[in-house]
Image 1 (tube, protein in one colour):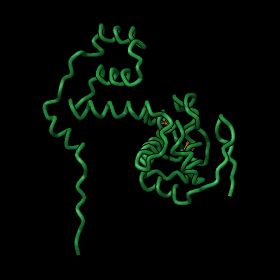
Image 2 (cartoon, protein in one colour):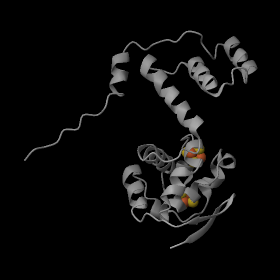
Image 3 (tube, protein in one colour):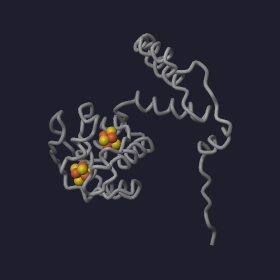
Image 4 (spheres, rainbow, N blue to C red):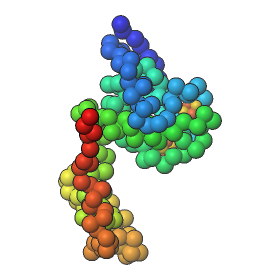
Length: 196
Ligand code: SF4
Ligand code: SF4
């Protein structure tokens, strides 16, 4: 079956494959009942990043409702979303949109979907790398890793110097005392299987 939907400012998308189980998968993993969404667009109006994304938050929900998995996992919105919860707080149906975005990012990585914003995914990894090593983010290192990957050594240099001068950035990383506790969060989960 071929379906056309018109929910992107970029225009129509033509879709051949629908995954009828996708919405259930997202509901189960996010704990957010997206089927209650009646597309009032409160979330879209309140999202501070909707101008930068290809789909408004409620349009991402529509993609999921329609089983358009490839489009939902491949859109830029799920990566540009910073999880600020503005939408989740304002939704009249109590739908936790931030949890839905989180779930879609998780599924996208798990299933090896094409990441629309690879720089953002790498930035997430840099932040986690820093937390794993220091127990907190060493912002200067995170920024330098990001700039090095993009070969943009001198962009934002003026801002960086200002931040250093105001002690918003620190040259040396500080480590939390209980770093072993933090590192436990990064160990693969051991799942115990009950034997009958
Ligand atoms: S605010 Fe809630 S009900 Fe309204 S469009 Fe967004 S998710 Fe749907
Ligand atoms: S949680 Fe994400 S989608 Fe919701 S308002 Fe914040 S940035 Fe926008």
